[in-house]
Length: 100
Image (cartoon, rainbow, N blue to C red; front, side, top):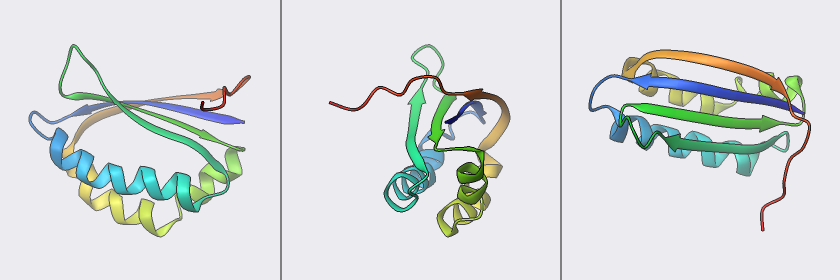
């Protein structure tokens, strides 16, 4: 499995607008993409403008397919102007704990 953790620094006060677009993308990713196993969005408790995206895909090809989906492509022009910086950690997922 392929994991991705994105540390996303938003422009000050942009979290609500970012989340309006990201909720749609995250929900559609898990709902419509068989290869997307998890797409979570977390807001840092100590910094309101720091958001973490945690994504798990069946493999790297599933992630590449994700970046070609209509919901991903529609989200880009909405979220890109709101992002100040973004750092990515790519990982091989060793264990995925099922939801309860």
